[in-house]
Length: 423
Image 1 (cartoon, rainbow, N blue to C red):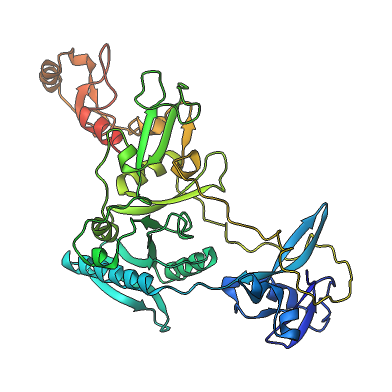
Image 2: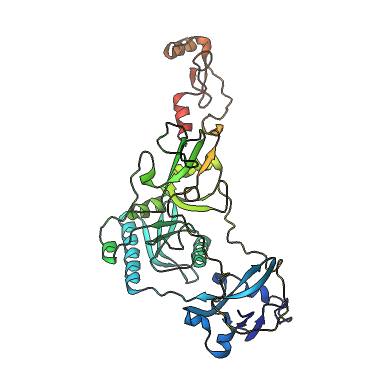
């Protein structure tokens, strides 16, 4: 393959086998050409053969003449190489009709339920930030109706842009292969025609909305162990689709998601794998489930998966002559996306397993309550509690008099225990 590229902005040819790329007068050139595609002009780098001859082998194979710079490791040697970018897909008329119908439906449902909706909402700089901006008590939700192919880099870039403007992105797609899945807050629906989308037909969310399930894994458990298929005696917590919950929960429709996301009843969460923190799932969940999860595991760390890696601390420069020949087809090194799970797995459900339930979830926080009661009041309370007057003490939660000491004594009243257990 070619060991260099043509820089369209500077009108220079770059030799990737040289430490200075053949241009010692441009010290920032390497960082510039290795910048991720979503952060630079797509047509910045061009195939050398295409630039010189007007045509190259990649175009016969359905690729574009535009290039990206990647690492390639053979044995223990890592070098820079140039790879052809795919041809951008153009939405078909059918995809465009579905896209338009979905935008109109989201806006219509939002306004019907007293929410503010803006189609093709623009930021102060005039650039479109979201297909439909829905505003409710929970803030601003930026809906993106994605019916045509899109790259993972674009999903991340647009999601970050929305977040920078205090907008929570919500991508809706009809494809199980879409790059929006697990890369941003998302929802997947069936492949309806534009007429069905525009009508009142119920559109069930098939993926992207989940519910927290917790259980102790015993032989008598209703569900098999997610680790060994039998039982393990440990505690499990994971996020399941509505139909897989025990008992099953009602499915969420797109119309309901429009309202619930804006009102804060459903919230986005990012769940990292227990064993592999790089295995990340993103989903919409009930706010109470989110709070329960954070009580157990804390708030998730900031997502650093998009951080730019060091530029050339491991590169070997071979000092070769510039070779403009395009040998497309040798580029088997180009990283391909890891296939997403086709069914629920520990990676997709955010499965967490632990030996015992964290004590803080089932105990009332210690408080220094003193029971202010006369002897007569103690005796009267003891009669209602069925105990001796000396067994009366303050509830650790609210301080109310309860049967606190001796046989049958409890730490907190039923109201406080129920409040803590339901967190």
